[in-house]
Image 1 (spheres, rainbow, N blue to C red):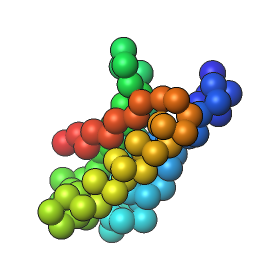
Image 2 (cartoon, one colour; image 1 turned 90 degrees about the vertical axis):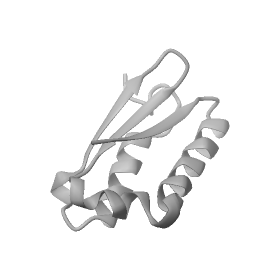
Image 3 (cartoon, helix red, strand yellow; image 1 turned 90 degrees about the horizontal axis):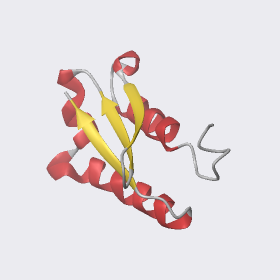
Image 4 (cartoon, helix red, strand yellow; image 1 turned 45 degrees about the vertical axis):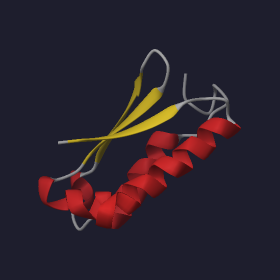
Length: 86
């Protein structure tokens, strides 16, 4: 069952779209949605040299993405986490 069928947004696609726009190598972006016991974890993987672009200065870019995921979670009564994997 897709996230939309469960009533929630497609957060994995959203995170992937944002990440692809931030990096120079969009083909290196991989996103997986993992269901944890108390949250849906979005795992974002990018090329090692692109990590800084996704994280941003002082972590501001990834903080903004996490804040938007928190808002989506509140709206749809879900708990979303964003992990950047190497």
